[in-house]
Image (tube, rainbow, N blue to C red; front, top):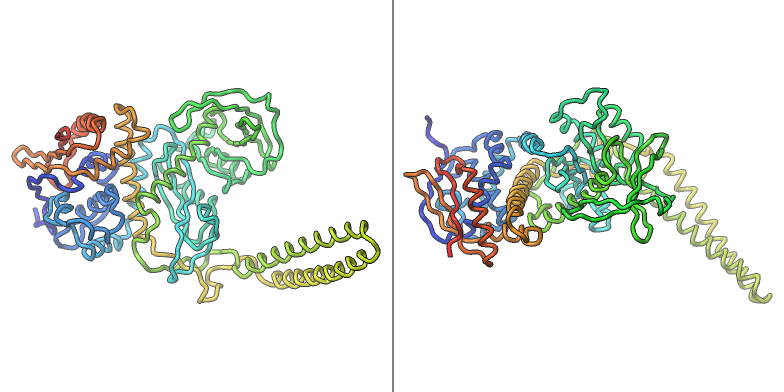
Amino acid sequence: MGVQDFAPSIFEHNESVLNAGVLFSLPALMTQGLDKFFEILSPLSAGYYGLQHIILSMCFMSLCRIKNPEQLKQYAPGELGKLLGLDRVPEVGTFRKKLQQIIKQSKADDIHQALFHSWVEDMPESFFYIDGHVRVYHGDQANLPKRFVSREKLCLSGTTEFWVNDQSGLPLMVITSELNSKLKEAVEEIIPKILQEFPSKDESSTEPVFVLVMDRESYEPAWFKKLWNEHKIAIITYRKNVKDKWDKNLFKPFAVKVFEQDVTMLLHEQETQLDGYCFREVRKCSEDNHQTAIITTHPSLAIELIARKMFARWNQENFFKYLIENFDFDRMVEYGTEPVKQCAEIVNPQYRQLSYQIKKAKEKKQRLDAKLFKKLEAKEQETVDNALKLIAKGSELVGQINQCKINIDMLLVERKSIPARITIGEMPQEKRYNKLKQEGKKIKNAIIMLAYRTESALFNVLGEFYKYTGKEGRIIINEIFTSEADIIPDYQNKTLTIKLHSLSTPRANDAVIKLCQLLNETETIYPYSCLLYTSPSPRD
């Protein structure tokens, strides 16, 4: 055996260690795929801190809501170091240097694929929820295309990440768009990665390989049918441009489970034709007769399950909200830009600007037309003198309307001479699009997914014996992670005991007692050590 290039994790008996409760997450971290990082990433250059120290630090930081390396300055380095079996945690400069060594390996995509493979194996049903999240950019180093940000209700520069979640909201995969591509383009990039994990279906099979659940942004009936005909991929999405209403008497009550609660919905199904293709259409009718239309290519899914799967999409929205609030989701990991593919085709920014000017000019003309129409109506009811004055004012409006027509015609002629789409390489150098460095953000996304799934795994376990898990589950888990605990190693018996201090309420302590029993059954070994993790009941 060779000499280690990093300091070994040697635990000592310590009492009341700050945030030591986060070690309760270790069994869940291991089951959710922590080992994938150690298998795929190469060892770091020789130094005090090894790869496992940096990866564990990032996981513990996420779970303790230490949102970036700079916030480590607010914590005693010796206290956090005890969680790693060291005398101190890396200081900010060292941490970032080690992180850069990880980033330079360019293995983030391999980590994501390995994690996805392990998570898909445990999925009870093959339903994938896909949606985009815009990471807004406020700097001046990068020249990024703009995209509408629904939470801001503005068009802002930024980078779009497309997330794949399961029906409970657990993250499975994320890809980053170079040029804020449409959801349809992102889905076409995601599909081959999902198909790798599923055996192909026989052509005679009527059941889908898997099901995609998306919002209206990807709406295209011909494409939906193409996915079914070529890959046996079914879709569930909202229907666009619904103008008719079905007879309210057609709707029947169905019991539907949404967000773990049983609700009664008025539902009805009919076959519908969209752009010449047949779809199953399910509508939900509310008390005020508002009808929500859902279409699907799944041939056999029950009507109440179609509604359940569609409305479960809000789990993904809640996931985004939770990450933004708790994990500093959009924060940059590394600064700098990278070039994008010069052959990539985009809408000509100049063409888009002229289209915007034409739209505004036409709106102005419509307002002037409306004013003129009102004056012509009023003239019929006025005296002769007032009518002459109105005619004079009307002639001014006619002049303004004619000028608007001239401006619109000039803009249309100018736009006609400009190509609607160009490649990145054809853009002026000073305005040419680029992209933010992505490798560091991909590593952060992998850590965030692992941390969120770890929390969720403990949350689900807590729900087996804690009555108030729905309201208080994540609060209790976060309290455990940030609580003090005693660290008691026993190298003779090869155990590492984490003795948690009392929580804020007796019922929380009772829940932790049962949680400890389940965690001990996992027989987890602390990474890169010979110590078996154990957790006795919280002390009084």
